[in-house]
Image 1 (tube, rainbow, N blue to C red):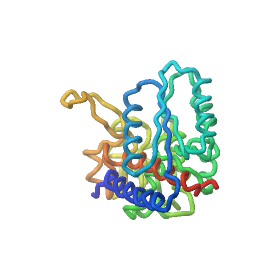
Image 2 (image 1 turned 90 degrees about the horizontal axis):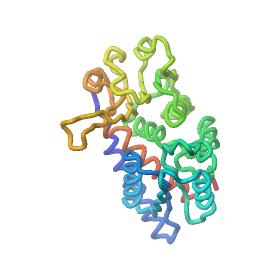
Image 3 (image 1 turned 135 degrees about the vertical axis):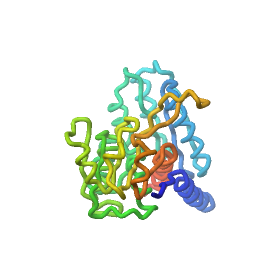
Image 4 (image 1 turned 120 degrees about the vertical axis):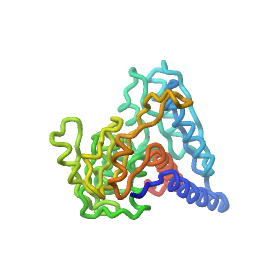
Length: 293
């Protein structure tokens, strides 16, 4: 069993991005600029945003953080998005999700200029990704593909089972695993809460991507020997013996599943760090105008 070290790969990618930014700077070019909008004080969201701002510093990007209270009106938020769309200095920006109930997430996502949508959530980017055109690929799926690539895991002709059909992970990663590319060329089955005979399906899988947000859902008796397991789940579960009072737990019963696998991602330290460095890669592409001229 080999552990897929997302943190080590993310650090490597950040160094590659930092070297490229240093070259841009030396040539007198424009430094990529990422803006982040956060609404309210959700603990998880604040932590993610802090990591994103820190990553910008590490790679040499310019970053701007815009904070609103949870009672901000949808109209005010959309006005801020419009201002960032028009700001020539901002190459890419994201609105940290989830948003308060009174704001339509879909309306917010569609208001972002797709050429600055470095989260890859805009329908234009989602559509272009699904048919293999250049696009900003959603950060978590892009991070998963990068891990498979850097660990040289064979995907062509393999049976990949994706558990979870979210717009953020399940659907886009299914699309990417089917593309005529490497990683890709897999036969993909997508499963979800209404799937019958789930265990029968997962037992046939060469690669399982678990992304349903259900702690320790995937058990050892659902996995065949030698399978590759990518665990996208990050659920906070109470852990009284820790300093914070909780710990991050994946969708995979790691302790019992790991011995059966050829490769597996841990939680934390697997897919998580890759998500932020994929956002950095998208911001670099946006700054260089490589996806949309």
